[in-house]
Amino acid sequence: MPGTTTLLVLDAEPPPRLGRLTGRARIVHTDAASLAARLPDADVLLVWDLASHAVREAWPGRGPRPAWVHTASAGVDHLLCPELAASDTLVTNARGIFDQPVAEYVAALVLAMAKDLPRTVRAQEARAWRHRETLRVAGTRACVVGSGPIGRAVATTLRTLGITAAVVGRVPGPGVHGPDELDRLLSRADWVVAAAPLTEATEGMFDARRFGIMQPSARFINVGRGRLVVEEALVEALSKRWIAGAAVDVPEREPLHREDPLWEVPNLLVSPHMSGDTVGRHDALAAQFVRLYDRWEAGEPLPNVVDKKLGYVPGH
Amino acid sequence: MPGTTTLLVLDAEPPPRLGRLTGRARIVHTDAASLAARLPDADVLLVWDLASHAVREAWPGRGPRPAWVHTASAGVDHLLCPELAASDTLVTNARGIFDQPVAEYVAALVLAMAKDLPRTVRAQEARAWRHRETLRVAGTRACVVGSGPIGRAVATTLRTLGITAAVVGRVPGPGVHGPDELDRLLSRADWVVAAAPLTEATEGMFDARRFGIMQPSARFINVGRGRLVVEEALVEALSKRWIAGAAVDVPEREPLHREDPLWEVPNLLVSPHMSGDTVGRHDALAAQFVRLYDRWEAGEPLPNVVDKKLGYVPGH
Image (cartoon, rainbow over all chains, first blue to last red; front, side, top):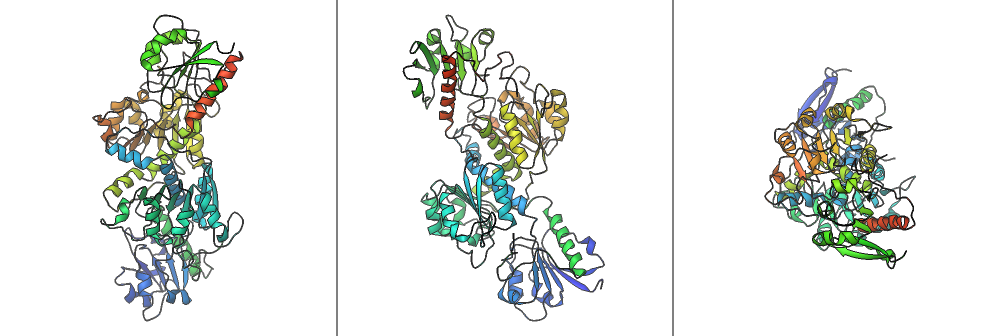
């Protein structure tokens, strides 16, 4: 019934454009601090603030809970808690919005490392003409860990550059290698890309042993989640030159503080969790939510439903 | 006749591996200072030092001249002089060796600018977590000026990233726009790539008028030659934000001195003429010269023959 649904929005700047829902839902905006007090009155929760862990913290409290939670992100690790996982609440994500942007970002990082662009920027700051030889990317090999839409889009984009890209996922299938092939593929890869969701199964999977089996010329890229990586092991691998370089868009601690030693690890490029954040994404994310809302209101099944035990949307 | 040919090599580090010519030619290595004295005894000249203008300076002198000059570069502007152009001497270049490396380098620059990577490197140096929105490259438009193998390889690589890439050349043809379409294409382009040879017709073609018709969001990339561009006009276009950014791999003055103001032009990335210089190119360049030498020795026609009036190898 129009107007009787309460849509709670955990807000961030800029807020979502939900004009199409005017008159169809009572839209209540909240910040992280007020979330716990407002959750019992919400039928639907839109998690628009992706930097906060407020849902995970507020959810276990008292009172009724929304029947549907949508997050404007690919990952759901910032909101899943045991109580939400055990509940009947439907969780959906922004599957599809970030695939191509992240794929382009990974291609940018691969090419930037092959062409030594970070050093070129620093040489320019030092006003130094330092000619170097660079690498061809065509003919090199990538191992993309994560077989969801983002991982597969990354592999497809790398292939257009002539890179042989293997995808590794939890379940082997067409074009997807299973976990038992991971170490073999890692040991042959020039580029290792972490694009997996953060789950119990993936947490800390990039550890000292795995950095140890990579080639000394290998470069590691993390666009998934910081805790996929044992950060001390990555720092050691770079400091001792077990691998040639790395780019981390998702450090374990976000935002990284000024004092964090990660800023100065040799051959490490740190970027502030922006791989998927292209101009126009806010409107695309809001429009996607409205499409899902249309279906929810009509009683139709929703796409992008997260398997709360696995911690991501299953299926290729 | 074996051993009777004198092959003069204008040398640079590392010298070319010409082992396959042992016993077939008398190989004489020279530096720029001794070139003039040695030219009269040479049947063939291999220009291995690409940074020097020694050939252009020594050629007009007295005495016989080599019948064949090969340069281990794509451009020939560093060696062509009126006397060489008017002579019967055959000039060949390294057509084919640099196409894919330069195409990858341009893709790296396009993606780095779209994803704002230079600013990320500088933010990391400042230990500052500065999240920004970035651009998608898919769906944008490029205008590649130069319809030789390098320009066409650049366009092909950009297209694999979903960019609509138009090629402009001196002579229109299949997939190549003529000069009369240049201004229209420039005014619509998100990326303008200069990949043309430096000739009388192309010198200074990127001037204030042409930067003025580009979009304020446009970015300019020069991997051709510095003098394709009126550098003061580029500096003004960047300083006054007529265009959004530029990357110059080939400044007018090489190497750029520490005091050069170009280092600090806003939104300009300067790299030290390395777009084609991938690991392994020395061996590829030497092997290419040996293949041409085989044909020359056998009296067969040579590929990659430069039209000395045009200043490049004509034909698509």
